[in-house]
Image (cartoon, rainbow, N blue to C red):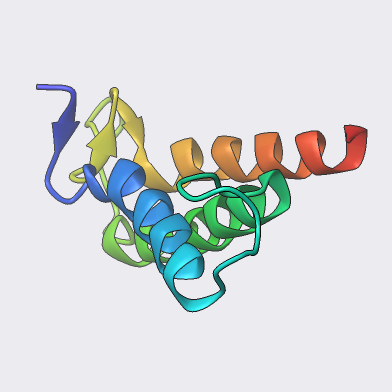
Length: 95
């Protein structure tokens, strides 16, 4: 599997935050399109929540070489979400 434990939340949390922002703050543009700043903000909020959740879920000490109990693509979920957060910030700054 590509995830273990609650690692699937690495994918689900940013998507849910994007959809929640699109529902709570609709825009006046064409239907079905979400502006890029709103997508970046939603993905950033979802990734931030996931980093904190991953740090909390993977807080138990492990032996050397033992995998994290909650991971996504064999990377602990907080680090995968931190990469997504960094990508959102980089795109926002370059835009």
